[in-house]
Image (cartoon, rainbow, N blue to C red; front, side, top):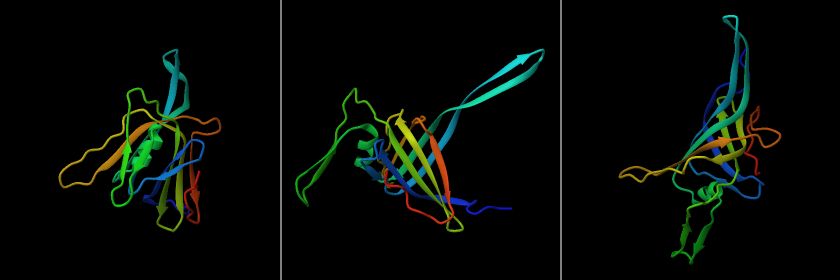
Length: 173
């Protein structure tokens, strides 16, 4: 018997939040949220047979992609600042990077809709970039920003998948 919301489709919303919940940034045009649970495992062999296997969740590898560019999202993931100067229509917004920048932990929230009006929220509680931010400008194509890293347990959980029978908004923190 099929349950409600067992046919997820697409990615409806993608947000990043500072680990303390103080700032949340929407990634406009979220395209991809993926993760893979990382497992530490081992086998005990003896007498020409495997006699025991252990598999323990260790961390999760994650990646995100979004269309367009969000300097605010880059800043949140890297611990950098975005500085806006001037007045409309002559404003400038700048994000600067330095060698030795130390990346902070942050949260990732994704919302996936289902064919029956329900939704699934994927919540990654303690993520950190472990690869540089990536994107390229190409003739005739939109910029796609991407990032990837590792998620670890925040002391109570590493990730959640919450299935809401009635679709809800992504939490603000």
